[in-house]
Image (cartoon, rainbow, N blue to C red; front, side, top):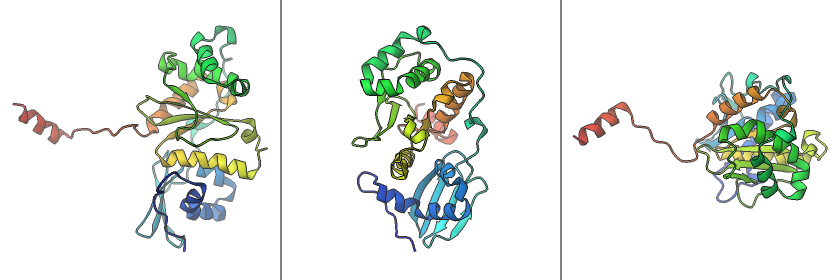
Length: 255
């Protein structure tokens, strides 16, 4: 039997995440050992209620459910899907913008917001990202773009996070360091890195991992990918929509 997992009282800890995802992790280790990491990237813990663990795929929105002992209760056809055509890396079609043709706001933002160490490590990736992807979507106005993990007190070594603090959706961009790309950081650090992804998704955020290879590929493809990525994200504030019946009632009350 797995222990009951309640909502965290304060900050989400690694121990809490390990408990929350234990039934799913164990199941995948038995049935999908080669694809565990690929699948887990898209899985969200939705609760442990009525002696059942609920997990949802963040893309397909389908569920996999286990009972308290870890036995599989239900599995939707695409609940463990991780192969999405629009997330595959495209072939390079055109070279990225040269440094001398970069929008001046890109350089201003990098100089103002990044430390010298981060600028040296992530500067070129950020230049390409801001110039080619995010800049055209915000008219090169980066005034609300924040450097850092969205939750206070959390620090992710060898990884840079950006998020637009005033955007209507909960979206963040992650720039992993070479240590994670090459898996040279060791299993413990890699697991901590993955835990921060799970923590954000647990809170309703969508995370787009930005690889340099992406930025040097087809820009139009990446922009389309970003549009779909934003559509999947949760709203920053609750959105209420009147049903036709409620709208009619409101209109009558104003007569």
